[in-house]
Length: 68
Picture 1: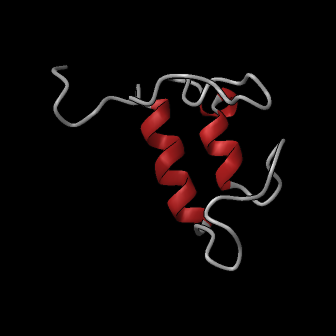
Picture 2: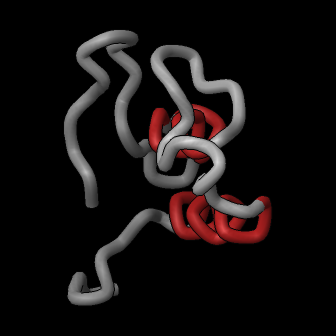
């Protein structure tokens, strides 16, 4: 899991179970709270790709090697 917080906003990078509170999801979208979209347009992720990240966070943001 990605630990830490944005130096700009103080928002946690990933909040397991809460994609709406995770800075990572905000940065992937078209209108992040600080700075630009990542990856930058026109190479941004599709809505389906962002949904995969959101679903991963919603399910607990576990690394594939972490035990259940």
